[in-house]
Length: 141
Image (cartoon, rainbow, N blue to C red; front, top):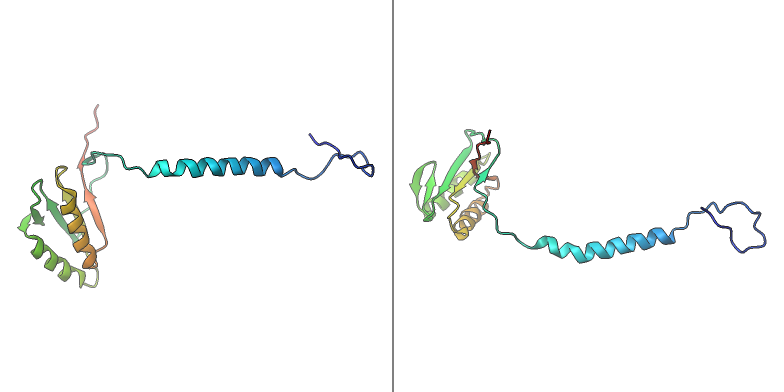
């Protein structure tokens, strides 16, 4: 619905220009709403993630399986290893032409600082492809 102006020169034709003021007002209101609600999306939620309905990870020749049990003990391809041995293994693997992927299996009771140390050691060695392995959930019939 277009309204004519108060001009005497107007020929009675509808106004052909779009009034941008209401559109700008709506956009500013939406911007304020998003500015207010955006910080609410950054709060962390405690989740229990070990069981996921997903496809099994494909093992390739360039894959290292690193397991961490609930007590923090490390296993390199199912063989016990210490944290220092793991760091030296990461350094050796990081020097290869094509660095391998790391499949990290951690018990849900594993402390986060152990996982963070493993990820930090891998990153320091130049191994950036890290995947987290979880248990598959069987679908109920």
